[in-house]
Amino acid sequence: HNLLLDDKDKYGITQCADKKMVVIGLSEDILATEVILAQYEKYSSGVKDFQVLGSKTFPTKEWRLVGEFTATYGEGEQTFRIPEPTYVRYLKFKFLSHYGDEYMCTLSQIKVH
Image 1: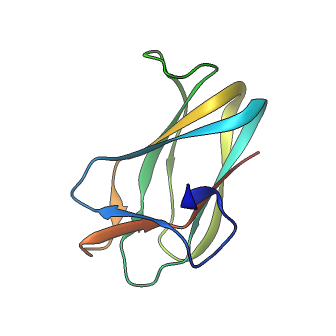
Image 2 (image 1 turned 180 degrees about the vertical axis):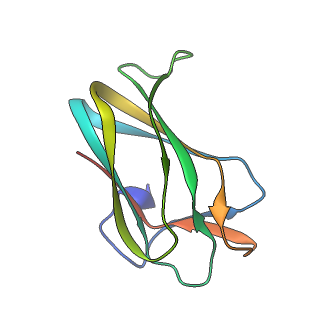
């Protein structure tokens, strides 16, 4: 749940070799138009390629692809426009690759608009 907090001192962390994904449940269905990833950690590897999948229910076996994105290397927030905005309540972020060769991978925050 640290990924949802607006606190630069809290973040999600895992070994870079692990499969990385997180599911976020929103308080209500929204028309998702963009996702924002924030990275503030200096001494860890960061997200590169990732997928966003959506659903109106959870748990589910049927996730709909919302978008595939590539983040740029560096600190701060990055905004990714969803090509075809869609109504969702749950979003699954699958982190496919990362920048750097650090042992640990971090992500500071996820926002959805």
